Length: 218
Ligand code: ADP
Ligand code: ADP
Image 1 (cartoon, helix red, strand yellow):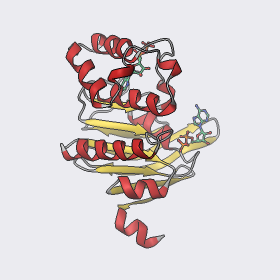
Image 2 (cartoon, helix red, strand yellow):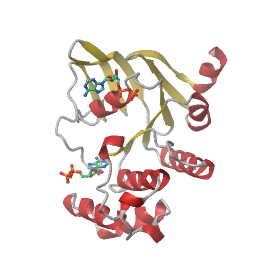
Image 3 (spheres, helix red, strand yellow):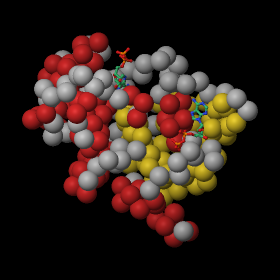
Image 4 (cartoon, helix red, strand yellow):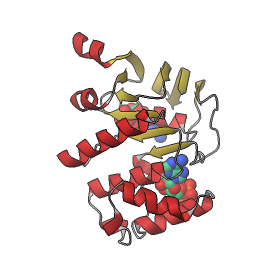
């Protein structure tokens, strides 16, 4: 469970997010919807402890992450800024990460298989299509078998089949009781992916609602 209380982040004299209070529950996919620049990535960075709130707080299962690195066993994240080094292969990248987090090598093979990258496992990630890079990012997020997943625009760059695949994966992960928080700027994609949505605009909470009521209102 993710709980944000009056979460606020200011850069200079501008508020990137202001007074966000919302809850993301386990066992369902929660969408984080808002146009570009609304504050979605900022909020996700605050949840992960990659940035500090100016005011307010955010916790994951009661814990506030302050360190630069969130434990992979607790929270898996896909953030654009966390791109894989272009010279590394999926196997190399994931194995290094598994080692530094005390995870067994078998996890690396499991997640490579789970995202369909087995044939590309030894190729340089720098040459991958955006869709394949997204799959590698998702594999990275899944590596520690975390209870919480924070995915920033995971559908970007995927083709129709890839989008369908990610949707199925997110539903499976939520169905296992995990907390799954997924951002998108596309309303229709969220409508097909999430059961609950948190909507922001210009850094402020616009709605926190079940999907049916959001569609009814629009
Ligand atoms: P989204 O992910 O919804 O596109 P962001 O969280 O990236 O939105 O951005 C929200 C606002 O905060 C934007 O106006 C953006 O320019 C600003 N912002 C984000 N990160 C920084 C930063 N490191 N320094 C200054 N402004 C930032
Ligand atoms: P470096 O090795 O460059 O100092 P890190 O060890 O912090 O950087 O992270 C290396 C890579 O590990 C990041 O690019 C990111 O892909 C991944 N990573 C680290 N922590 C997480 C996490 N909690 N969730 C998802 N990926 C992570």
